[in-house]
Every structure is written in C-alpha cells, then in structure tokens.
Image 1: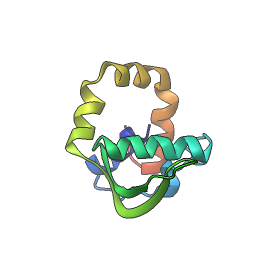
Image 2: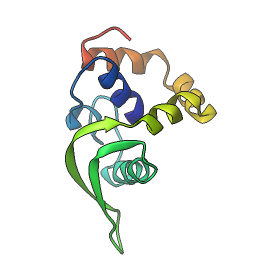
Image 3: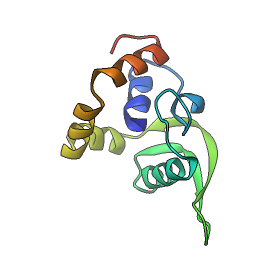
Length: 108
C-alpha cells in the first residue's frame, strides 16, 4: 500500500504526505512498531526515500523523516514486477483504490 501510494503520487505530480500513509491513516491501520519495520525495510532495499533509519539495539528502528517522500525506480520495478505484489494488489481490491483515489483526488 505504501509503495502504491507513493507511486500514484509520483504519477499524478502530487506531494506525498506522511499523514496519508503513516501507521494510523486512511491507507494503513497497523501498529506503529510494525509500520516502522516496514519503512526501514523499504528504505534499506532502496525502494523509497524520505526517511533516515537509526537502528536501535533493543527495540524497533527509529524513523526520522527527511522529506520529500518518494518511491524510487527500484521501488517501481519491485511494485510492478514482483508476483507477491500482484497478489497483494488483488487482496487489497477495489476498496483500496477508492480510498487512494479519494486521498489523491484523482481517479485510479
């Protein structure tokens, strides 16, 4: 969902807003710790930019925002070519597209 949101922002020349894709947003309803882990993985793999990750020894990584938030070319390729991403897209279904369209004020 995060990659898709950032990709749609890019395609529609919109600025990605953290409150649209954070742990307690219209797109994501997950615990903050889990969201931080996801963001850390996406950054480490080079799929997104806009965050600095500080590894903690006992807890989850600390996430520092470093705007703008964007998907990278590598992130777009992963989103479009990865078979697991296709399954995730099917699972999210039309409801996610409606929410994403409403957030971006565009038809997806």
